[in-house]
Image (cartoon, rainbow over all chains, first blue to last red; front, side):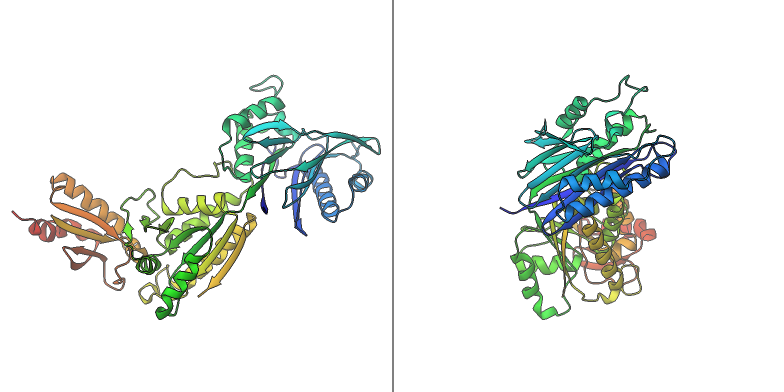
Length: 386
Length: 83
């Protein structure tokens, strides 16, 4: 079975710093995903430069299948030496893995990565290597669906040190926290955000160190098909609806007219709900056989806003929304659940909408921006214009 | 039972259908007419061009503006309720 790799990270900057001294870098190439988390010595500009160099070098080299030893020695020999401390130093964790869940992980001086399997945290079986006097730990990976790897910078296990906790948050506390708060089906981004949020709480909102959590999740494919707007050729409605419905995956219909077209094809009725959980988003509807039915342009506009927030790597609001408005429900299905999103965009013009801020150009622009953001989230996006 | 349907499509939403729905719900409750008026929503009725939010009362079409809801309630809806 072909699996899908999903990743996401959240970074907190040390209080008062504009730049983060942690850096996450990812490259997807030749069926392999390479994910690097580097933590530069110190904080601010210097740390940021060290982390950026380290993560870029490692990510590029590893994704080109250069072996661990050569990668690490390159980094060790290239990094600029800090004048104050007389060392060149960035800690790092690197994952290199393919879509069958096979690959390797190697770590240098970052807190040990955590493997979450069957909803429980465990340790990796690490092997020690000595490269130019540095102790590097390597692990062969054979992951299964619903495994997560949690990488973190030391800001995570130091959270709360000298403030709420005497010795900071120990790794076993982090594991306990994950065990307790992990919900089945949580996205990689969701897990990273949840853990970073807990650190931020322990730091009382003022992180004493740059704190980064990067998560890689192995999962099964979850396709979603979404129809936005009726097709231009009215007499071919049935053809287009049939094509939309025939594919595998969850079905979403956005738009009043589209939902009527789909309902007619299915021999069903559209039942509009009458609740306004959010004053900016019109109510959703229900059609038997369709997983979610919403209004069109206004809901999509809100969805675009939500996608910008979702993509922010410093935003700590939970990634899965509890809200019940059309845009939030869409966001959960598209951002959190989906791995593949296929759009069916009808370009029929609703004459009555022209001139209003809901006309066809607006709709097409929204779809384009949303699909770009979905790609940034790592989804496989396909657009069909009818 | 009088069936009142308010359009909640994009165009009517922009013209204030949410306000109309909330005000009608309020008026129906205030006058204890919950057993006589059945309020419902629908997606686009295809009359986005009209000057106001699309509303039907027992199938008759009206274009309603939010500021006229009170009058509409007493002049149209209440009069349809069998005495």
